[in-house]
Length: 116
Length: 108
Image (tube, rainbow over all chains, first blue to last red; front, side, top):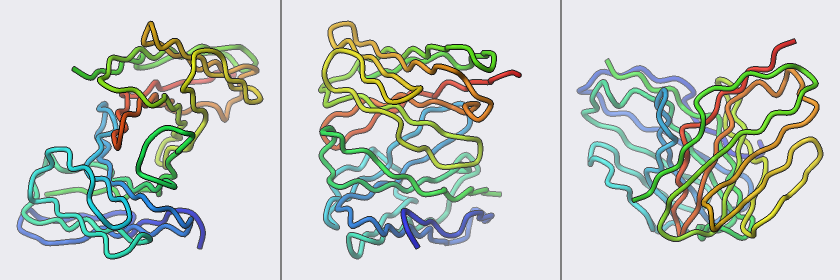
């Protein structure tokens, strides 16, 4: 596979469930990101990892727990979510975590999450 | 504070030219990106500006004025496949701040 892949593509869960989203990049990049995209809202940066170290956490509730075991894989562990957490969750990667210098981000197709 | 403004929707005709504006206020600036996102798909990179001026890439051009906190994306010779959302993103160290996106509809 090439580029950035995400699984599952769709997920429906109850508020008491625990689930995980997975992201994998095959681009040799050192930085990975989690974004939340809700209808009619800007893309919201949640977490940034650089070489498996978290370098940015944008005041995300603790019910979202990221994990980056290596520079190619990123997980988002979900527990006791709320209905307002329903959104498209996008993973992205870039050569480095320092923005600028043509450091474009490559996005995965996203996971459409519905919390009942 | 940090803020990015884009029009919510625009409509244009196939073959025409359309300009999508983006104004921003941020603390720290390392460049401005434009991404295209078709419905149900991931955003894809279109352009990057860090210095003032116009960057041209085929049918798409992007302009930046740092003193005015202003950018635009210019799409020429519009095609039906250009119907998509166009996201403006401003970058600082580790931070990418996106606008809400402009949904462009291209009519035949």
